[in-house]
Image (tube, rainbow, N blue to C red; front, top):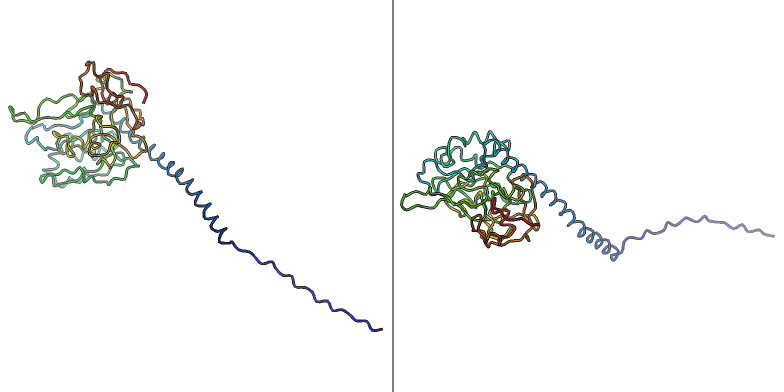
Amino acid sequence: MTVHRILRIPRIPIKPRRRGFTLVELLVVIAIIGILIALLLPAIQSAREAGRRAHCASNLKNIGLALLNYEDVNGRFPYGAKSSVGRDHAKGRAAWGWGTYILPFLEQEQLCNTMRVDSQELHDLMIDYEQFRSLPQTHLPIYRCPSDDGPELNHERSFTNDRYGDTPMATSNYIAVQGTRWANGDYDGETGTWITPRNDPWGIFWVDSKTKISDIKDGTSNTFLVGERCWANFAGIWVGVRNYNGTGEWGLRQALGISNIKPNAAGPEGNRGFSSNHPKGTQFVFADGHVAFIPNTINFDNTGAGAEPGKPNLANMGTYQRLARRNDGQTVGEF
């Protein structure tokens, strides 16, 4: 009997074919990633803005402390702007502002000394020492809100005349509070001078102001010192003003602001007030040194804002107006 042997051929294992993503699966993954980014991006941006706002509050805190230290040393707060000693050519004359006077208290004593703030006027520096015109152009981070995207030099508030060389000054986002109205020298036809007695704007800072802590009858925790102004409203400059007898874009609003316009109002009206790039409000430092975020929705009413202390219609003023005045005698509510 014949025996047949069966030859067994070993099987070669077949590896399973790898399956790739289908187009539908790929689109689903991309969509999921897009949704996650959309959800996370606002949170990231919000966290970044929170950091910038905290940095801004720190700047204001340091500015407030510098102002309080100046008051402690000198017995008064610095001038909002200083008028001309000689009283000649006062119209359109440049003047140092509050931001310059506190430089020694912001670790900028060398800059203050080089500009010779104690021995000459800003007008003199611009006219007689053209080689030093770059000093007021010095970028000082302490005067810039990190949320603001404005340039380092403020061409919107330049020293716009021939004798000053149409020179732009360093931008500042921090503006001193003058009160509820402007107070500047008006031309007196009888005396032929621009240096006339100035009306009290009822804030802390104005031309030749010499406000003391003791003058803040409403309480230091209820009175604004300095607030923000963003680049959309032309911001300001720290050195002072080109024309301390004017209230326009090249006048007192270069360093001062008033509260007769709502916070974050659009220009040109907003160019005299206070504003910021922080969502829904603006930060201020108060006369006791604390910093608070003032919402755009704060109670606002100009009725009585032009009244002198003791007048009955002061009670009609909004909370925002009351915070800008040092001696209106009105209760400040929640804000």
